[in-house]
Length: 375
Image (spheres, helix red, strand yellow):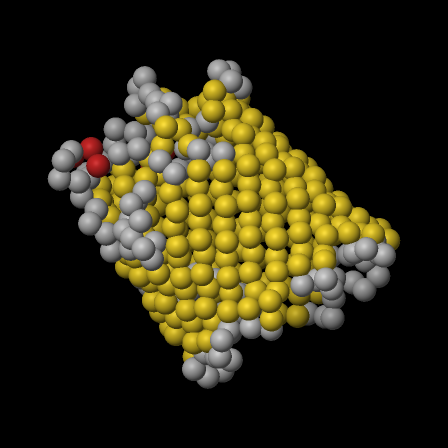
């Protein structure tokens, strides 16, 4: 079990973690304590029980001297519990059965106060049909106190050519997404009449290791059809549902290993997102997006992570062209001993000015820090 103040990259080990950070900006301050407790107990060699408890308290405040519309002080609280049974018999694939419950509360002072409960049952079965074929099927049932019941599923398929290690992969599934409290109630934007989004999606791709796995190239085509996509209506200036939307494109990635202490990833995606009723591009969804990430361990106890994000070709809800932008993030951790690891992360290292929504600047240079203690 692990206890302490956490970092961005979370492990799957058994731990108790508390995350505490403040993100400073001229207009936005975010304070978010998080508590998570994971417990794992093997019952037999092939049966494991897991329980996860979590609590989050996030304060988000904005102060705009030019207009009262952008001033807010929001307190979001979430408590959740998840329990799973994992069966891994040697003669079969992995079977996972679970239940989760989540309670969400949001209070925008002097504007809205909302509560939501979500109970879920889920199951997933992974099966190895042959030495080179693996399939999986998953089913999920959600009961949302505000938006009712919904059942979704996902299936996957993978086939590996033994002589070249080429892996062909595909997936198909459905989705469900309820509106957030801000989309429902945020002053001068929220719309309490919003419907939940429903969707289906598939992807198909090919992955190829090169040079004994020191390079791994993947190319994947994806498509997503969404009913009642939540967008922004420029007529009412409120959140609204788009009846039908289609998002499709190609994603490529290259994982590479330079040495035992240096590895990285280059990822690029081309996305065509359109409103099927108007055949127009969906707002705020870039056609071109790329990430370049490096992970280094120059000294045994040090880990350094750096990411360059590139975003290109976006429009806003009024069809105006949005600026392209680049952003660099860096994270560093140091393992003092087996049980102690301090860390810090810097987002937007070069203090780049950019907007996710026209007229609303994002946070400036931001620093996160903490300490992870393992027991």
